[in-house]
Length: 262
Length: 247
Image 1 (cartoon, chains in turn brown, blue):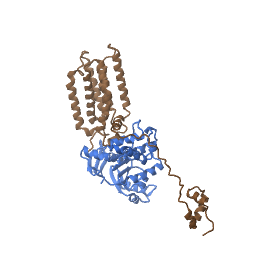
Image 2 (tube, rainbow over the protein chains, first blue to last red):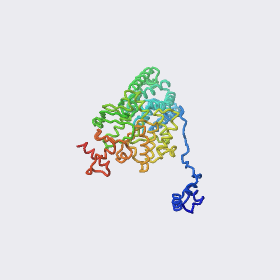
Image 3 (cartoon, each protein chain N blue to C red):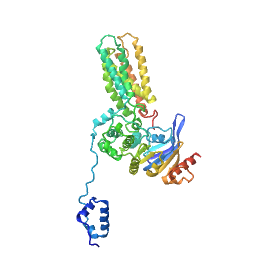
Image 4 (cartoon, rainbow over the protein chains, first blue to last red):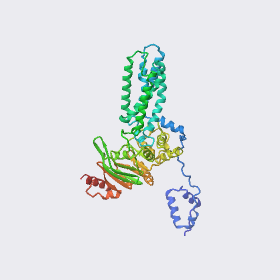
């Protein structure tokens, strides 16, 4: 025991960690020996509150169905920028043809370009070349055909109105029938892509369409066999065949590989 | 067994990348070591259900993946970080992780909390609303880790996760690994032997498409002698096992 005791103010300062190092040492040395002072150590009433350095909540979105659709459809590879420019060019072409009823711009150009828009958009939407996250997306439950179909749907939602407008303006065939080659060629691309990957599939389908339109161009202007109502059953048959292939080979879609995982 | 691989063979064209590889993993942190080109990434991709095997059996989470139903069930409980990955430029960090939460078919009500928790675990919560492209390489990799763990996967596959992390982040990452390994099977592929020594309970060493060693880090260290090349016991063990496998 000793006659010297630590002052109340110093004890409080020590408990609150406010003393300088040497002063704290001497207090601690004294506390080691002096039970009376140990009892007087305040129960750290004024410890600084725990730092609240958690960041603010930020933009947390409610997990609604709309949010899910918006994210799954809206998020997509950057390659779609190229596709959007193709859409813009087609809109421009449509406007040009509409503004000039004469034959300065051949109308079959519209028929050549418009139905290929969804084909290009679909091919730019998935696959290891277009999608920087393809590898990770392929390993998720949603990967494969399902996410590819969502993205194709978003592409069609933009492309089809443009193609229909092209049909109305060009006065070739019947505007409603224009939507059929759009859908059929897109489905054909998806089906072919299960064998070749989307990029090559889009090239092949585009090439085939070019050949068809060029061949049909030799016919008199007022007949447009590709988009006339009699062509409807043919396009429906192509669409059905492509859908069948996609369904049968659904495991081959959208991954980083052309073979199925089993 | 969370992962049971038997006689796994993978070919790219004529080149045999994995050649009759056997592997059995259970809960815990497992290191996958091997020289470049040994087949580590290919093995990771097969386990991530991204690359198909040419031969042999793969059972994940107790199920042989025979059809689409099993495949989806396994994928919901899978976390995968590839060696290299990109992102959509418009994504914020939080959107990037949220996107994968949706893709992994997590229950909607759990998603916001799970996303923020994953970001907090990798130390990115304060950057959650920044765009991915404004992040440094190490931060982008941590965002990649966050998307892998957002669904609390039972099987977590991390391919070279420490590449681009500074030493301090590596230490934090190792303690995260130990946390995750308590109730998940974590497979970490790396070429950094010291990562394995510190963070992993078991090590598998792959060379030439085959499994050449499986055991604890201590057993790997014990395999080396004074004459083997390396700066640490475990590095000497690593070179000794490789030399023996190639002899």
